[in-house]
Image 1 (spheres, rainbow, N blue to C red):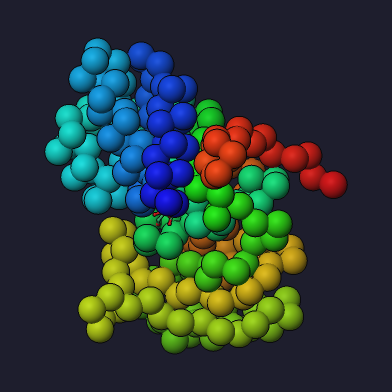
Image 2: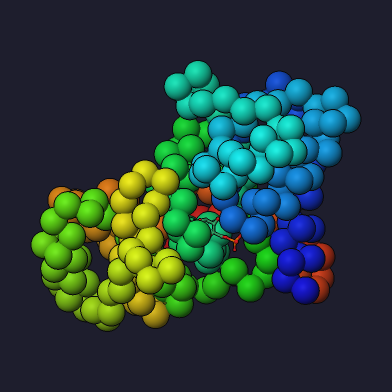
Length: 233
Ligand SMILES: O=C[C@H](O)[C@H](O)[C@H](O)COP(=O)(O)O
């Protein structure tokens, strides 16, 4: 059923796309529904260009005939549409479950608006149940891993950190990096954690997206809800 809800959220976001827009196009199963909905509109005459956030999305856009460009050609985008692994009431996100966080964050940061699309299972009161992806340079991995553990300890967070694997090997991102997944269970202060992780040499980026999403479409049994960020308490 969640696939149906993902599709509903994605199709709602596709209604916001107008001819002439320069888009950021997300990655993952929900974003795939958006690409498919967008491709239908393109076939009906919608004039857009999009920057894909992964090789996987690039291949899908080629397959479906969605016109693409690059951030070098279009460094200012109008709208990014992307999924999330978790989203809270402030529209802070955990992303990167599919390994695309770095390009996704760069593209989202280049966009005037970021619309998150998700099924209702992604909406949480507090981030952290989903393991936080931390993208790391392979060089000096063990030293960087220790630095991350030191930060987790300083912030009194669980020190459960796993190198993401695929087919028995370290998973490698489109950018040639590896991912440490931090099983934190609950993140009391996402902003503080984001700042601390970003400062660690060897950490390229992480899956905390803060102050980037401008609205969300979350679909569930009651239909599609439009969510705007709650002003911070
Ligand atoms: O790295 C992958 C992206 O951050 C995805 O947007 C995120 O993992 C959500 O994916 P899905 O829509 O498949 O749940």
